[in-house]
Length: 142
Image (tube, rainbow, N blue to C red):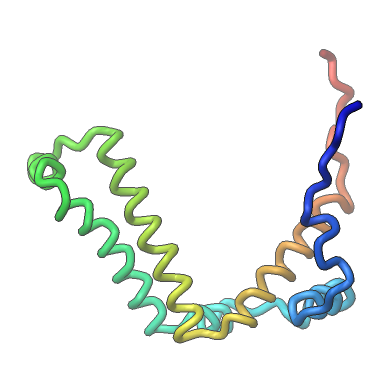
């Protein structure tokens, strides 16, 4: 006999209501109400202050690599960075930027509008993915 464990996300708090669940129900009926324009999305991310925080986070991430590794600084000065060093800079910059974006949205922006915009965007995109086109125009030959 094999015991199969259900994923707890399928049954935990399924009857509960929250602001996000109610917003998701409203998004299903009228998603255009929650989609933001580019300017409104920029303001929901924090506007100019949020952009400054995000760029500061990127610079802190990349600067921390150079501060912790003098070898990286010498490689940068001589222009001899290899793919691993570029990957390290990209990863540190990405982590700094993503963390700073969360800070800017929650501090200077409107977190609920930002979150619900992306909920509505993903809902509309997933609905449009399956409508109005054929996936395979020719029958596979393999």
